[in-house]
Image (cartoon, rainbow, N blue to C red; front, side, top):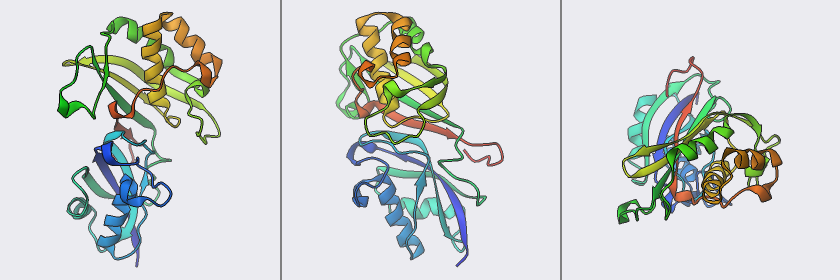
Length: 255
């Protein structure tokens, strides 16, 4: 049967998943695997789902983008309702629509934005425990932003690559990197063309570590330039991280 490519805007609570990607055949506990199983039931055949990038165990998303090739007899806009009726409540499809066959959720992405949520000096209420990182210290916003500004531009981010990262190049472009107050939370937002495996968590942990230890933007610049994993600070926990937005060329006009 003729296929059509459908793009999906996905949100999920990553707490109970092993991450986005299928891990050693454990598709039932990955976001990707759960979506593939549901789509295969809908279409009556095995369907693969490709995401804009993989998120780790415990990491959440409010704006993950994925695509799948499905039979043309299923209207693109109806895929959202069909999937949501079969997926657990921890995964919600926010939008679905048919896109050109050359649309690719991973390779076509030009900008990805993450948010990392911190509860500084305030013990978070129980319902937030899986969605932010508690720190004892209350940070100076101006100081944090001076340190975070070092990341903007094109750099080799080898210092912040996890040991298992398979990237051929570790050079990435960061468009924005800054901290903001949102109510009683401190939020670190970073946007770039792409990120290494666990890079955002490593950056967040190192930014806070440099603020704790002193040295300011000069110290952060030194660690970045070292291209040495030993220069990274502690990796921030996964629970505070959200993939919030993925952008594509204007010709797609979807997300």
